Image (cartoon, rainbow, N blue to C red):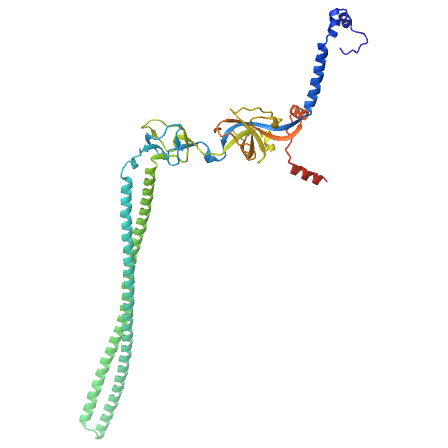
Length: 452
């Protein structure tokens, strides 16, 4: 009732008529109840003024800090048939221990002497390569000999040309001398004839001069013939020189052609040798792949393939191994709205499934069974579950995490933010406001300086 009207309620007057109602007002436990309500109200107001640490909660699982320390799958690099298992689930294996042996199933690798035959082919090709190399060297020596002989032959031909030139000069001089003799003989003959006419010379002198003149004329013809012969020899020497050049050029070209053919065969054989070496190395490595080995120390968690005689393809998972030595970490997932509040190096509280824990999210100092962590990585892309992944490592300044933890165990996390009163936190949650950003003392002091 609002008691707006001045008229008194008839109902209260009617109740006051009864003795029981009068007795109820005088009972002592009602006074105690009123005191309890007052005390609880005061306590509630005091609780509203208590400090509350804002936080971001998340859930995840135990993992490892480094990717190579996480559970890994051993796969078969080649296809084959399972022949023998050397381990069972739960066994501890060292790096290089054999897990399984498989046999070959492809036709091109079924030959048991494939590696040996390939090596023999490679050795034969290497010998052929050496032979071609020797042939190239021999042809180089032959070409050098031909070129040296060509130089001598050309020098000899040039000497003949010089001799022909000198002989031409000599014959030309002799011809000039004979012509001079002819001129003298003709003059003597004319003089003798004139003197004979005058009766000063006998006829025998005239005949002698005529005979000598004829001999000189005959000698001129012989000398001209010798001169022409010398010129022909000169021309023949030049022709011989050109012939020698052409002949030896042909010999050198033929030898070089054979050398290039040998070089081509040598390069082709070298390529075949390299190809055979590649095949030999591949076959040797493939023989080692029949034994599937452990990549690192760890425990065999699960054998994915089973049985003997089963065929598997390359890349088929064989077994999973959990490394024995690993740096433990926790991966947790937070909502996108809380992601801007997190940064690397921020402190995190973690508790694990299976460990007794009492958690007060707003009062971390009162929590029991939680462990300290530190953010080391924040994923930049959202995960399939619609949240962002955060990787947490143990805090070196706090208590070590339990050694009994196993990868894959569940974990819960709390990222601690700013400290506010309880009433403020209730008001924030009811209004849907985000938590306050955490500010270090260094930043706050810097801000105060800027304000001043």
